Image (cartoon, rainbow, N blue to C red):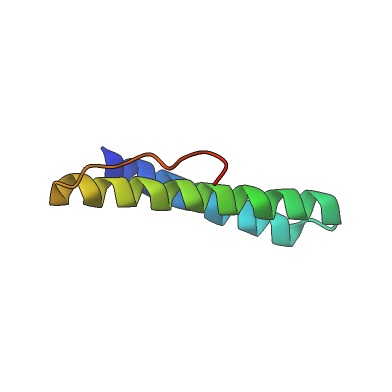
Length: 66
């Protein structure tokens, strides 16, 4: 199931980047580029968490504000 989620986020990132390149409005373009990066970050985090679960390592949450 997690593989589908990673693929979904990557596909959404690709769509947002295409839309960013297609728009003439700079603010909208930047917002879409930021959205694409957020989707990619989410996909990367899911992939990392899956690898950690497979390897048997426990995931420790990062402290906020550091």
